[in-house]
Length: 250
Image 1 (cartoon, one colour):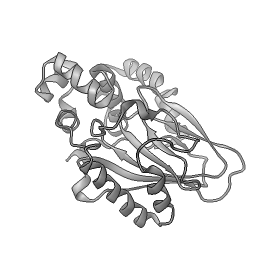
Image 2: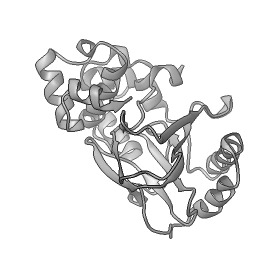
Image 3: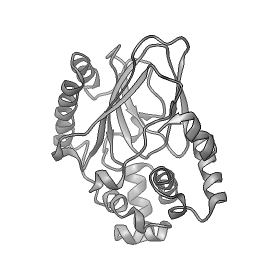
């Protein structure tokens, strides 16, 4: 149910980028409460020009692995606005995208960009990235699933009943008061809980979820009117809705 109710769009890949491939693999059933997908972004051939990825806020934490250089890895998360990332002319990234709120690792260890330097943290990301780089897509998913299981055992990834309730009942949420009611918390408890487990204040999380929902359903289900939608969309993505849809393959 969670997988169907919250399905964030991929980051913006320009429609003109014909030699760039993005793929997603669903995690095993036992992990679908925690992991949205295992993903891969790569060039098929070297590009004539540097490629720019338009990264979108989705409240998810990603573990990222550079498959060209497995020493490069990291924990990434955006807040409420997009960022543009120059990935060069040849790249191969893979990653694990966790649902909002399930990552329990050090929040200060996450960054808002694709990392370009060797990982120096305490997680075995280099070892996992090295093992994944030796596999095809199916084998890489197996490596990632096994790693998620070790993170669960270590308490670094765990179900979050508050964000799970919010994501599965998103259709019922129109403001922060609705969010608190769905989560069965007072507004103050909601503020404290979301800040601790997602890094977001309730209002900011709602902004991100509304944006993501607008890609899947009629925007009037989330916004008061077209003007409100366009203004919010442009603030968070840097584009009007029409220009975004003509520029990116989402």
